[in-house]
Image 1 (cartoon, rainbow over the protein chains, first blue to last red):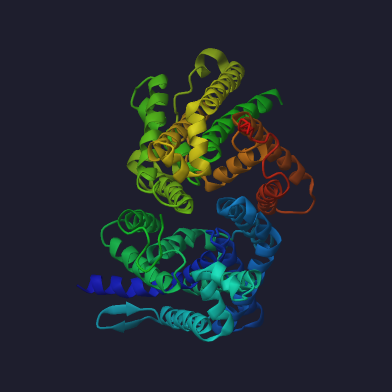
Image 2: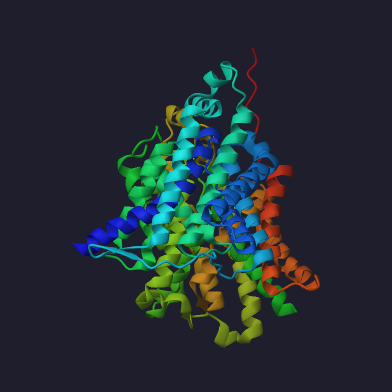
Length: 287
Length: 301
């Protein structure tokens, strides 16, 4: 029973970390209609940006998150506008493959300057809380709180600002949105900044949880995809629900399979959901 | 130097087989396979285990291809009905899972240490130099054979039906083409060729480990196929040899850059691969040998 509760707590904590980049991924998909593999690169770039301001200037987690959001968002904007946008006429799949190449370049730029070593954030170490026999990391709780704040800010942006409403209109029906005078390229730029920025912020959260290296983003790529597909590609509330569900599924499966197969859970989740409910928990049509 | 050249040509041949596999699935049928390295690995492990258990090498190659077909059917059976981008995500996951299994199931694959002492036919009889020559020629012949076979297939009714599916599957279905079956056949055949490449690689190297099946290989092959010309078997083969030449060339070039660490050299080379793929997609999106699509016969009014 305690093991089960512990798994539930751990699942929610780790799921909340994946939720941030998953929302970023699905936001880009909702507007630009291609799965961006470069999201892994944005996660790593953000992680290093946050780590840099943290260890160089001693900034705490909130400012590191902000730096990561800006660094990830700008990197995403440059890559999207400079490298990916022009390939749109060749189809979504071509852009997706180009985004793999972008990811490879970003990852290796980081590797060139920082090497392959694992790096940790410079934060005070806090002992775990023990509540009724359940261990809860204080840093993990902070990360959960930060993730909730970030995702909440995104919802606020989408619901209550002009750009947010325009973004939802484009995601819903691009032609109708254009008729209403919404400039699609401007919305695309905002979506990429937002999506890649969230990916970057997610990188810092992941780094606060453990450590970072140039492969940080690639390692969570499958989980991010799984969360987005679980929730329904293109659905932002879906990505949050999907990430939490995935976190729970990963932790619960660890009760029966070895921990090394953790990433495989995401793959199995994708296969199951595509077989039984292809549009995801909260998503649109997939066929 | 000669043996290095022979080695590079043999590895080029293995890559060419992978490129032919990808070209069949992606170029002809429009089915993207980001788990190519996984199918490559399955072929390698299948034959290593089969011949390790005492079966002859020829049978091992057959088992490898069969394993590839089964894995291909398994992965695509559930997702072919869905949009193409889902297949991209699923195959990427598949490739990772293959690597995870190879890393963790020590009883079967010996984990990260890999399998060594895989039967290398001809090594004892021919000596090292003779072995290198024989394998270089042998693998090149296999590449030629598969390429010719695929070219025939491509030009025939099967290839035309696949391209119809790729361009507009609803229209193809409307015209009476069995869309799902065509896709499954193309993907399974492609997986078999990739597994064959892995099997040949395993016997040639006589050592395999999960490190040999990094997702990076899949990217190399995407570069080969896009550079050579998507939808043209010959282009895929040329592209694969070009990529191996490029990889080996950058190895020497990177060694010339003064004052950088080995890890930086590796990073530069990988970044160059990514940049080249982007460059090809931007400048020659249809490759050096573009696909030939015969014009429809004119209807006189």
